[in-house]
Image (tube, rainbow, N blue to C red; front, side, top):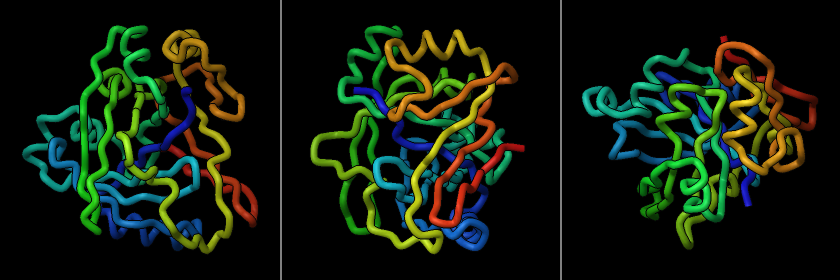
Length: 211
């Protein structure tokens, strides 16, 4: 199984970005935690089966040495940075694409440890029209299911618009089809990036766009 997991949004300050997102779009968020290996931290905007991840640098010295930290640094703040696909068999993904899975974890504010394995972060950082892949660890609750009340009402991730090389993206995804219910992603030719994220709310569609 491969399906959309979340979208990363680079921000300069987590609390300020969360307040701005609530004010502009009626979207609430919850504290995530620190990525000790990356020098970053996050907040989560739960959307059920998916979520938005507000991610910021909190240890500039360490972040400057990591792929994710450098990716955040060169991304316009408050804009979509990358997207992530969830899989139940990341080893199959790594075998197909010649990647290496890397274990990760973070401690939540309530003391739980979330674990995962990722693959393809270096490639997605260099070419943001490509997603990277994540397999959540056994017993790890999915961040999108966190309890939250959005002022916008019921919210779901309706789609992602990316620009880049469509043939390259299709090859990267393998047998997964773009545009279906599990992967509502549209790609057009252009510089590789996430151009926008479309959210369906009770009051209509809201879009978080790149510069």
